[in-house]
Image (cartoon, helix red, strand yellow):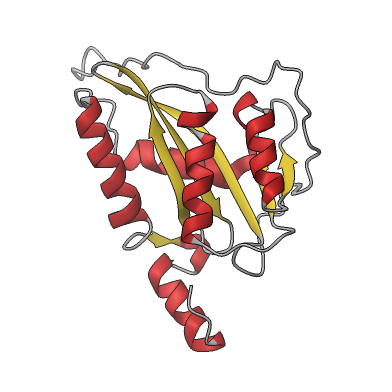
Length: 208
C-alpha cells in the first residue's frame, strides 16, 4: 500500500442502536426470513441505524413494505428514545399506506420495539409482532440491506461528515426522491418502485 501511495480508510466510531437487554416481552420470529410476500401491507419490517454528523449522531428509523420494498415510514431523530424513533416512523407508515389487522410487523428485539408504548401502538392497529432471534441480523435482512445501500450510495466514508441540517436534507432526498421513486431494485425485476406499483395497478385496478 505504501508503494502504491494508498492509505486505509479509518473505520468510523461504532454506535450501537439495539438495546436488547431489557425486561419487556420479545415476540417469536414469526417472519422466519420469509421475505417474499404476495401483497402490499402483508409484512412491514423496521430497523434503526446511526448516522454520524459533525455534531454527534442522528438515528434513522425506517419501516419498509416487503412487497414493493418501499420505505413507507421513517424518522431521523437525535436520540434513541421511542418518541424519536419507532413511534413517529409508525405513525408515518400508517398514514401513508392502508394496513389491515393481521399485518406482520417485524423488527429486532431492541427496547424501542419491545417497550409498552410501541407495543400498545401496534396492538391498536391489531398488527402481529415478529422479532429477530437474538444476534441474528440476517432475520431482518431487507432492512439491513437498505441501510447498506444508503451508507454505500449516500455516505462516502472518504468525505467529510455532514452537518445535522445537511444530513436531514440528504436523507429526505435519498429516501423520497431516489430510493422510493427512481432507483432500480433487483428484487422488483429491475424496476423502480413506481414502475412496479404502476404495473400492479394495471393488473389489479388497485392504486397504491
